[in-house]
Length: 349
Image 1 (cartoon, rainbow, N blue to C red):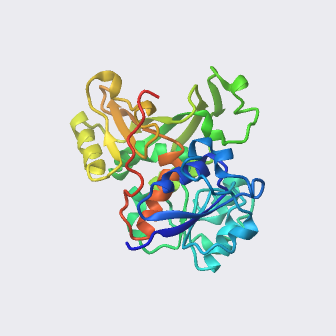
Image 2: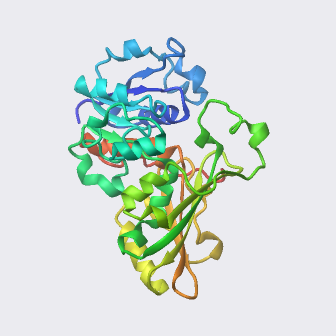
């Protein structure tokens, strides 16, 4: 490409906005044309994201009004849930491609959106054309898309854990457990995310149902009555470990499960299957993916051949949010899918 794609980020002061700025700062085919923040307009990017001061030494956040006049081909929306849809509609009307990291376009059915998010969808007419933002599932649809949704980080981890078993039609029921870091709660300090109240705790946020479960049901075509999702806040800043306890509908051998996992993930650039040995590495640990767009998957099968643990580990801010968004945007814009995303995990972290 002769020139870089001008990109504007709305909601650029949060954790996912910061990750988008970090990725695009070294992206070979994209450049930041604007970083929008209503509350921080006029403030240098480095004042909010100190680790990015050297990358954007002379760039300030701009207001939404200024953002509407920026000539950008691609828009990332890192805005709160229930607030992004109207901005997406305006940007699409302006002829811009949109990748929305919020939950506003993840569910195809507006009635399901109303049920899980307890409000009417502000732009239901856009749902049919939105592509769910996980390239491993919707790569071909993304190539011609104008609107791509974000992904729920817990949903992402569960989908990666269960997809090989779901595609094989093996899942009778599944109990999904997501162990999550504090950054999942966002950059704004709240009682649930305050370090002094949260540190060293094991806080069960959602015992049976979580909103991200709606995406798992939708994308894996699993019956809701046979699925549950528990989310537990643990002593991490970044990262999710998903452990899905699955009851299978027939007896299988371990070799059969290895074949399913290897066949599913062998050609995916960011997904790996954990080794069988040593035993402590068989179930994925998020420490080995932090700071990267990578996914680790793994499994264990009980002796009866009917009970399995399917697992995954991701960085919630990257593969669970900004990383998948950029990967999707790469496909949408016809560039290398891996562009800007081949950073190695940080270890130890």
